[in-house]
Length: 240
Ligand SMILES: *Cc1c(COP(=O)(O)O)cnc(C)c1O
Image (cartoon, rainbow, N blue to C red):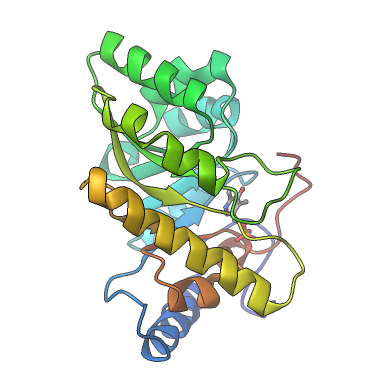
């Protein structure tokens, strides 16, 4: 962990600069890397100051993990409307409506049932809701998300969504694995994005990589990396 980070949850400009430099270096190592990689600054578990200090440092894209937490925090963030806020945590179906109201994009659409519910509720809210489909590339029973097979099998259902726009794929790599395993997961997510894009042209984004593995993700073609502790320091205890 980087010395310039305190654990107050304030955005560290120095850590941000270092992350940008690492991303630049990772891009140069790989043919799959894309020219423009966006950092989603993950503010879950931190006070609203994380958002406020991030905004002051020029950052405009944030990630939150829980509907209830965001519902409390975002009204206390005066510049919220000048930012984009992604929902990145598992979304319970009874919070789907609130999530549509609160977030600019939902990254964690992990079942066909949730997709269809969001599509219906977005329609009722008169909104066009951008989403990512979360795929379980790690074959990890404990993680939510579509299996690669189920994702491809449901392409027609996704394409039929009228009030949701499938804008990409999101994945979480297995923890504490050797880098070959992680790289394989990220590569598989990229291939699935490419496959889906043939039927759904809007499906361009690839959200993968966290503080521990974002460089690998960039090498495998991530368009978005989700960084929490790398930018804000260690998180207080948190159960997703
Ligand atoms: C918490 C979280 C992150 C950020 O984790 P760090 O290790 O702090 O970078 C990224 N993605 C998801 C889905 C998360 O829940």
